[in-house]
Amino acid sequence: ETGVTQSPTHLIKTRGQQVTLRCSSQSGHNTVSWYQQALGQGPQFIFQYYREEENGRGNFPPRFSGLQFPNYSSELNVNALELDDSALYLCASRQGLPSYNEQFFGPGTRLTVL
Amino acid sequence: GQQVMQIPQYQHVQEGEDFTTYCNSSTTLSNIQWYKQRPGGHPVFLIQLVKSGEVKKQKRLTFQFGEAKKNSSLHITATQTTDVGTYFCAGGETSGSRLTFGEGTQLTVNP
Image (cartoon, rainbow over the protein chains, first blue to last red):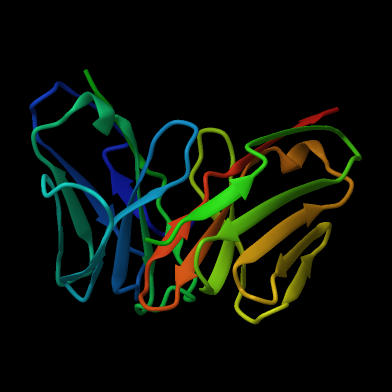
């Protein structure tokens, strides 16, 4: 186990609804990255947070938003859900910002949008 | 933006055969990481390469980083059924801190 936890593990929503996913980073890690992994594809970078501020964003619309708290845990919010949002959402934490610092993934949240 | 391509998409081998997956970036990378994801699981960090031309070994796994820091490979010698999973490379951008993942190579090993 990596020490990175995510909740919930599974979620079913309908189109148009909103969802909040949560990530608890490994102790001492101040950077959290969020990824979307569609079935059969590689993780796609959504955004990352460093010391409570967004630091880098991938090619995702504004209805994907996030937050990082003082304890470095993080949330991913998705508004106006679409069918294509169905995917595994992964968070990964690491110490510091450089990409060469080893990052640890959580088990993911499987989101299904009907 | 940075793109990372990985081939092949799928590879089926008999147990004992070798396996190689290749990763190519559209831009020069600061580092490259390799991950393994078992079916139903999440990516697990295997290794990181930082230096041009670097070669690292982990038992039956050999990782290489190209001289131009734009490509990389993972080679598994004498595959075992425990090697089953999808192998991803992830490139670190030189001007930022994000990682861009390839699409992965799904390895199946027939006993």
